[in-house]
Image 1 (cartoon, rainbow, N blue to C red):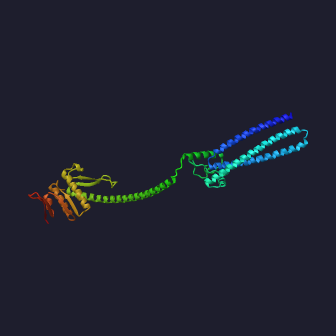
Image 2: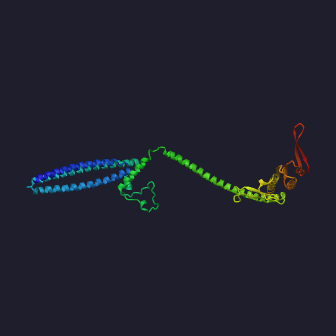
Image 3: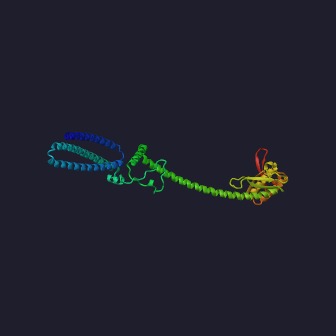
Length: 390
């Protein structure tokens, strides 16, 4: 009965060994597929380091198992002499132990093969890292290994990280494989979205950088020029406003005096349409001849409008004197009384300036120093005639 029990135990152990063998093969295939999915060098280095650590632990476990098996075998050999009567049973037990030993031996062999594969994989990763990155693998592991703190992840789209460097979200974190795998997948998607590498990107960037530098310099020049122009415009506006204000006040003062002389008993003045803005304001002429309440020029007679215009013209002459004045039939619409008043003002202007007056009025000609006329002879040819009176 004991022999049958041992046989069943041996068969069970053999079945279990086969199951473990299939599970081990499935595990190796799963690990091989998982290894092929590692695309990035940093992650491969970290995984290789972790696998190497696991292999070392497995080897340590195998060594412990071998020691235990050796102890059991020694105990069995020692018990062999003591249990000669149970030789058959011990033989069965010995075969069972041999089966376990074979299983352990196979396990050790598989561990050695797996360790060799891992070492080969690690060597390939180290060679690839050295060729593509130019960095020793030991340096990469020391700097980016799983025992190092992981820098904080950059802000996702639409996310705003706090500016405080002491905030926990801005502090390095311990390495956690699921989080870093997620971060790796996100980085791979972002890398794929970049598309193909443009070999001319560096040259294009240099050209654009040069263009940006040129345009920036041009923009600075334009800003400086604009500031200079605005300053010139400001100075010109201030000067124009000053000159216009002075000229307006002088002309307005002269207009009141000249108008009262041309219209005895009347009132006239110049009024600004927008006194708060001397650069855009207009100037209205208010005229009230004697005996009238009208101030609008459109309601005055032709002679009154003409004489008001002459008053404004003479006011400008007096406010800003000039060596020469040219007037073209300014007294054509005036009667004798108003003409006489205008002639007196012309005589005043004549003291400091020369007047050239185009006229058909005899009384105006009488006060002239010289006359120039155009006469047509019988042959139809025009001739200029001059006569100095004084």
